Amino acid sequence: MTSRRTLVRALGLTLGLLALPAAAQPDALRIVAPWEIGGLDPARTGYLFQRMQVAETLVTTDRDNKLVPLLARGWHVSDDQLTWTFDLRPDVTFQDGTKLSGEIVAASLTRARTAPGILSNAPVTAIEAADGAVRITTATPFSALPAFLAHHSTLILAPSSHGPDGAVRSVVGTGPFRITSLTPPRGFDAERFDGWWGGKIATARVRYLAAGRGETRTLSADTGEADLVFNLPPTAFQRLSRSPRVTLITASIPRTYILKVNAGGPFFGDIRVRQAVSAAIDREGIAAGLLRTPEAVATQLFPPSLAGWHAPALPPLAHDPEAAKRLLAEAGWQPGADGVRTKDGRPFRVTLRTFPDRPEQPVIATAIQAQLKEVGIVVEVSIGNSGDIPLGHNDGTLDLGLAARNFSLVPDPIGTLIQDYDPKGGDWGAMNWTGAGAAELAATISQLGSTFEPQAAQALRQRVAAILQAELPVMPLAWFTHSVAASKRLSGVTLDPYELSYRLSDITFTK
Image (cartoon, rainbow, N blue to C red):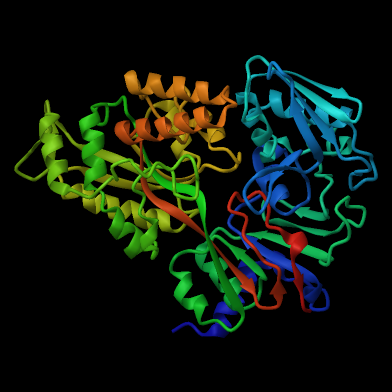
């Protein structure tokens, strides 16, 4: 058996970025999560700089998950619902001493709008500076605009962040932590920015490290090499629950494990086949046996944590292998002598792509492989990287893709839905899905985006949920439980279900 000393030595090699000088270690709040720094532009990995409170957006969410001002101090929309004015907080300075202004905000948002990112999906026609404010005009009424301005791609950076060519060369924001050293893709160090508009905070230094392997993150928590460890694998819970060093914190968040299907290919174009695949999947077994969270069974796409989107009246998706076999036969897929179903001489053999950034995903993929085999579908599991699913979507080679889809990076699911259910499909959503259901969904999402009346909006959300439940262009598998291991030397640790912030400014710790 590997000794604890050997494991710690291995951890030191793996987490080399955390190997601070002994005298400095107690002063730094050390955070470990799976996500590497893939670039400095906010559209790429701005979520890290947002979560670590280096840079900020105009809007965020509060502890009740309501939209509230951040760099904005408030906003209002014109009577025709086409012009939004976001008043800016006075006396905000960037970490290089530059004053926040409407001109800087307008330039930053214009970059976000013209680059690939969430704001390019909004019907924005103009962004301009006003006196102590920024004014945004839309071609049509768009009620979700404030939520879009909480997305990481709309982070407001100082002009000094950009090189002569306009590319982001450094991350200079307005948050309570200022980057002191950056080592892409592994991590960065930051120190307290005493000029932060929100006041002085307790923590003087923070350090972020990307560790892709779940075992490595678990070990970093268990040995005390890290103070906050995010995205723990399910296997870590029993081990860390016995650790004298950490406290485990969990929360349900608006994310769902999904099975994306090529709804226009030779296998999944028939809705009966999609319904059969859904019925063949044992969601209860996946939630209880693999994720060790029985309550995570996804009976529909939107989890209960998404109030207004979750539809309690929908008939739940259920495990029914006999119904799956019947539906496949009705669709023309008959079992052969070897048990594999065929249609027009074509065997039902497909490839399921997934990736190990979330260590539970390959395990779920293997379970699905076994469950579909029981109804005559042969699945080859391909474990690659997170880019393989969008690549397969765009080149047409994807059969099935397993991922966890976040409905809250824009703290209104319509931001995700616009990307995923565009008539041309989306990298993480529908693929080659056509017909009356697809057309109705697109029209419903469009109508919802322009609806300001709460009751009408609620009815449209419920209709979105019903269409997706009936058509299954993607299949929900399990709802997501977010987990973090926090060192017992910390106090004030809470989880943001929308994952906009790690709330480091609220934390105090003993050295």
